[in-house]
Length: 296
Image (cartoon, rainbow, N blue to C red; front, side, top):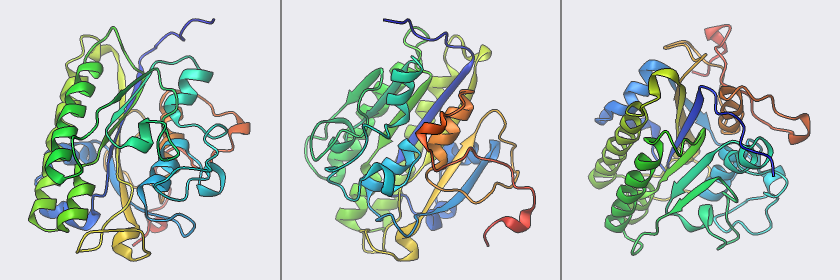
């Protein structure tokens, strides 16, 4: 068996926060997300016409870099997928490029062989932490435990994942149970606190000064006011990506983004040229040549 590829200086952290509405962010106290945006960008993403506004297909698109026609995930039951052909970036990097990778979260289809999963088939290290029950309160506890585990892994130079994905699901669950009112807003702010703990863990690494980190924060879909998604309204179809790191200029306009661009940028941030046979649908985040190209 071949040894792991030398780590080099590049690292990538992707934090997926499920179901965060873009239109509410300006009203909320999210200093850690704001810091990522200030060091790079935060931009709107529209879920495309072929993709249901559901977590399964959206997260599959985000982490594989291909659309639903290729990865075959059309709902929250992942059955019938083609993830063996179009794997997530943590699995591909571990298998093909011998890189250390890590994925953590609490939603079963992402991490377990249930409901047609897992989406994350074989990262180098996987941490699944189940909520004790399906309630907003239990999901907040779950996200706390996921954050603690991820901060522990990210802060260690000996484990040293080069590409990581951390999933936080409480915001989405809160919207489903309680709608997009005050509890939902508080859950978004709590997720931002957890994002801050992950960023602190990265910055506390003994080797941090010698490393080049890319941080990507992304949501999968929005919610209607009463809570819920799966339809084609603007609120449901509107998602967003925030990112900072090498090659991302603070405040520079970016070309219109797609969920498929996240995985593409993970590979670019690690200085890996995708094999043409991967047939990725996304492209790395790129400064726009002309601000007029940006959507209004």
